[in-house]
Every structure is written in C-alpha cells, then in structure tokens.
Length: 344
Ligand SMILES: Nc1ncnc2c1ncn2[C@@H]1O[C@H](COP(=O)(O)OP(=O)(O)OP(=O)(O)O)[C@@H](O)[C@H]1O
Ligand SMILES: [Mg+2]
View 1 (cartoon, rainbow, N blue to C red):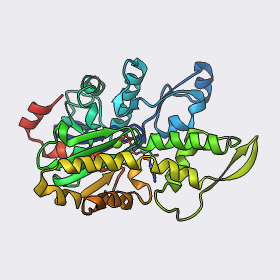
View 2: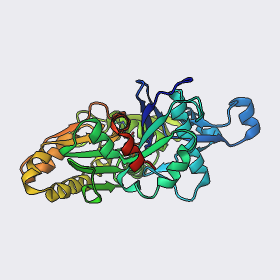
View 3: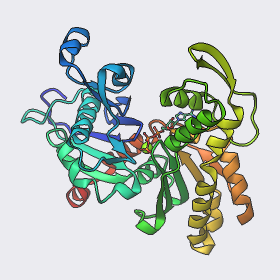
View 4: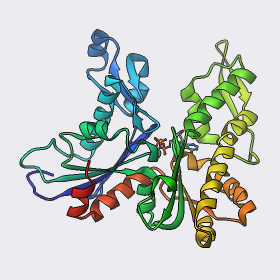
C-alpha cells in the first residue's frame, strides 16, 4: 500500500476469542482477541520493553498484564473505556499485520467489512466506527453469519450456524439480506462449555488445580458429543503433586450442554421457513466457528433434524477464516452505491 491509489478491500471477523483479517492482496491473519497493558511500569520496562501486548503474546505474558478480552458476545463491552481502547489496539494490530499505513493523502483507499454477531448489530455501530477511525476510509458492518454465508456462497435456502466462543449465531438465508426474523443469537457456545467444564472439575475433582486456560486447551483437543472414542485423561497438580484425572464424563457433559438450546433454535428457525423450501434448507445446514470442530456435532444436529424428516449438516472448510473471507468477498463485490448506502 505504499504511495498508491489502488483500493484495498479487507474483511474482518471480530470475535470474542479470535479475530481474523483477510485482505484482497491475499494476506490473512488471525490473532487471539486479547489485549494487555503492563501492571507494573518499572518491572515492565525492564522485562517487556513494550507498552501494549496483543494476541497470543498478551495471553502468554498474562501474569504481568492487565489482560482484557474486550469483546463480550462480539460487542465492545459497555461503559469500559479500557475495553474500547483494547478493541482499537486489536484492530490496529490486525491492520498492521497486513501492512496498512494510517490514513493519509498518499495511501490508496481502504474499504473494510466488519462482521459482528447478529444481535450486536445496532448497539456497537458507534463504537466500531470510532475504533476504525484513522484506519479505513469506508466501513460496512454486516452480521457475522451473513458474512459466512456470502463467503461460502450459501445465499439461498441455507442455514448458517456460527458457533464461536461467546455466542452461537443462526441465520437462514433466503436469497436476500437476512432480517431479524431470520436470525438468532444464543449465549451457548465455547465459553459456556469452558465454564461448565471448570465447574464440573471443581465438583468431581476438587483436589485438581486447574485454570480456565487449561480447561480450554483440553476442550480444543478432546471435545466431543455422543459416544466417546477414547477416555480423556489429563495430568495436573493436586496439592502440588502431578496427578492423572479421567475427565471423560465431565467433557461429555460440558460439550453436550450446548446441544439442547442449539437444536431447539435450529428446529424453530427451520419450522418458520416457507413450507415449500423447508426440505432444501434442512439439507443445507452449514456450521462455522471454532466450536463447530467439536467431534460428533454435525451428526448430533442431523439426529435432531430427523424428527422433521432428516437433514444434512456440514462444517465449512476453513472455520477460522470463513467470517473474514466472507467479509472480504462482500467488500470486493460491493459497488460504490452500496458503500454509500451501507457505510457506517
Ligand atoms: N478443535 C476445537 N474443538 C472445540 N472447540 C474449539 C476447537 N478449536 C477452537 N474451539 C473453540 O472455538 C471457540 C472460538 O471460536 P471462534 O474463533 O469462531 O470464536 P469467536 O469468533 O472468537 O467468538 P464469537 O463468534 O462468539 O465472538 C473457542 O471457544 C474455542 O475454545
Ligand atoms: Mg465469531
């Protein structure tokens, strides 16, 4: 983007746990949605030599930092100036990864599509606009599942279920931009599984010393619904001594906890589709988001569809970049008139 007038299009997926960016010049990056500032300036100057940490680096240095995960349910946390600043740092970091300079006369135009959860749509506009100030020339906000649908070209007779960390976002695609009636957001997603698993560990293995970060790592390695393929065992300190625990039942219960609300919402939305198209939508249910990687999830949701006459549930090829790639596709396809009409 040096001294050029070319337009660069970007798609950004601002997520509770991970945020990704895809650019029209082929660059793609993903970062953990963490931002941290040193707790102790003097120690920090000596040890870290940095004023702010973003992503994995922030997470790895968390003992020294005021660590923020600023996007709760995909919305910038209300009333917290520090969290707003954290979102801005996160956006700046993503943008710096693809090498865009701050807005200037010599820079080409940057057009950005930012995907946020369906229900964050109204509330976080203003905050996002100010966070993107000085970064992009035009910003369009779209609902995250719509971005995914656009990216995988499932715009007609399809249902997208994007199960992330903070939320599960549902969207029925009927060949037009989805309305409120076509979309739902549930708080049952990766974070709620982590919290449940932590609680079950505390109940069943109170002597095990665990943190929420360890819990999340285990879940990402061994999560499943349905029958276990093998036992899940972990080794953690108990009164300081490395001890092995079998957590198969707790892992199963924690992961299964999101199934009833997700199945129920999926079925409810399917029942609202015009009757002649219901079968087509049932055969075209697409999972996205990190939690769609839970082993056995597509099969469990297909089973839930069986009471309606059966369905087919698939997982997108690239759950990490499905949202930002979709945002990028929208940014590239949008006409000047679209940008004028839909920009923030
Ligand atoms: N292999 C895996 N198995 C199960 N869960 C996983 C796996 N990999 C990632 N996850 C979970 O997926 C979630 C992150 O997914 P994703 O990146 O789609 O969320 P997000 O976009 O940051 O969140 P949201 O969309 O809710 O704002 C986390 O809860 C993470 O633990
Ligand atoms: Mg997401």
